[in-house]
Image (cartoon, rainbow, N blue to C red; front, side, top):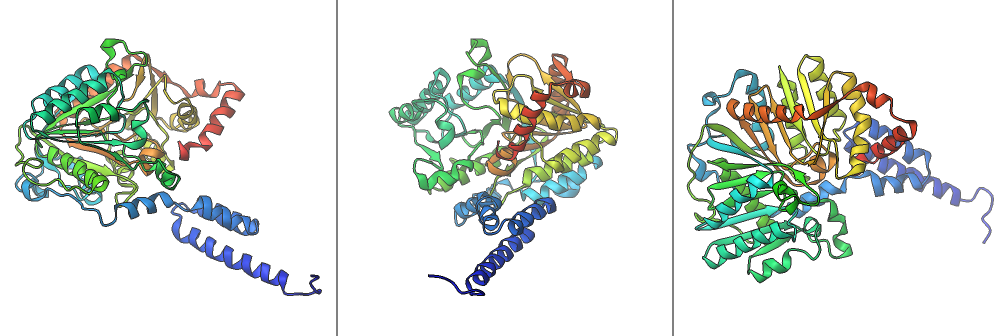
Length: 480
């Protein structure tokens, strides 16, 4: 069929492109918080007919958060507020230095969790200290055990935990184990067969066995929690794997830091697990075997900070920026994966320019080379404005902590990278306790002694091919 000159087909095509471009560019303008991203997408949409709107629909819309919100919608939110009555100090009664008051109020607003008094928190170095303490608690359990982990390796350490959990089941202890479906596959065959053999009730968080589930590959539960009898808790960055037992000289050693907790904050940890378990299995954990009346064995003010791509989106990043803004003397940061976005980089640089000593300790030997490459170009800007960066020597460091002015601490599962800050479900603990913060600072400083400080000159002297490799890796940082 031959269209006559001046026919309506070209006009129809133009109208269709105009409507598609109007719709998608309007969405970009209204939904993109970063104006530079909005301008870039609007340019692509209008300058690349038809393909521009299609590219935006495929790549420009943050469906991760929407999927997470949809998945969580209607699922029970477990709260233990009733049993915590009397433990959450009123704002005017909180024993917080004035310099940290603004940060405490910020965390009040973004977490909706109470800052609880009467806690005791103890650091545990590597699996050599953490695993015996965790296994001892499991062996002594009388009523309940809840365990959530990202990686549960099918190795000697993993099987030690399975046997201990199986013994607890046979003693009549109520046991629930939640393992991330992707993390479970880090070892093959998985630990599932051993858990079934010991009759340990367990579930996988968001399995991805079918193509329909593939969009949820990024929605991972990265939390590491163990709560025994609702009274003793463990959390931090440590998975369950033989590599953390350094004294046993594993093939791939991993240095890490975990924490034992007692007090009302354990109740909040249990609430996080119960919510994840209800989401995964539809079983609601309630009653005194899971949530007994808390006790107060210590003096630390602490609370759980929950972060994820659902309704708690961006919580942790807001807290990190707030902590950097109140710093007056010193900030110490340790993380294995360091890919801060522009806002966090500006906050780090601004703190350093105000005269705050900002130390960032990263692993000199990273288990993910592409993450290490992507971090190098960002380090140049930080060093240029006074942030001090260090590379640890020896085995891979997986510890994740932050302290501010020897008064405030943050510990838990989250890294300083887009995956932890935007995609994963994470769990951290905020602590206002000068003694505990100084203990972490002392440990951090001993690590600095055995580390190499990175200089701007060293990074600038890198070969051009190395700089290009790192620059290309940096372009992938939103997806690492």
